[in-house]
Image (cartoon, rainbow, N blue to C red; front, side, top):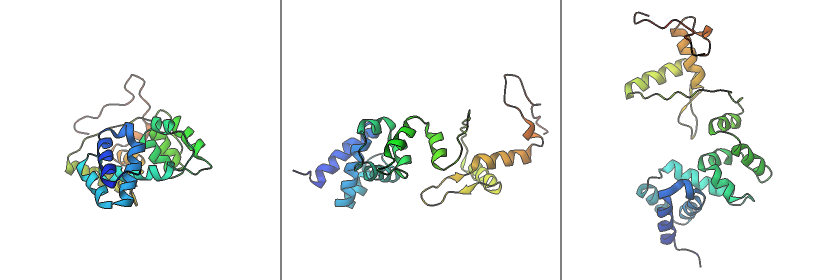
Length: 194
C-alpha cells in the first residue's frame, strides 16, 4: 500500500537530518511531495535545514537517476553534489561513462570538464572572507576585468580566476614574471609605500 503524503512528509523530514547518507531516498520522497502536494514540499523546506536549492537538486537527481540502470551504492558513494553535476549530462546511453568519470575526478576538475574547459594540474584554492563592502568592491573589480555574472540557476561569477589575475597584473606591474614558489622568495616583497 502506498504511503500517504503525510507519511512521505514525515519520512522525508527524518531523512533531511542526514542528507549525505539519504540523498537518493530523500530526493525520491521530495519528488513525490512536489508532485502530490506542493504545499508539503514547501513546508519541508521551511521545517528543515535543506534549503530550497538543495531540495530542488535532490528532486532533479531523483528524476534523472531513478529510471536508469545504475547501482544506487555507486551513486551514494559519489554523493549528491557530483550526482547533481553529472545529472544534466547523463543519458541511458552514457550513464556508466559519466558515473565512472565522476568516481575518478574531484568536484572542481569535474566541474571544469563538464563545462568543456581543460582541467588544471596543481591548481591552488584560495579562501577569503570579506565584509559586505569589501565583497562589493572585489566583485566590481572582477566584473571590470572580465568576470561575468552567472545566468539562469548560476548566481556566482564566472571566469573569476582570470579576472582576478588581470586585475592584479594591472595593480602590480611585472607580476606576470612571478615564478611558482620553491621555498625561497621569488619576488621582492611589496613595501607599505608600494
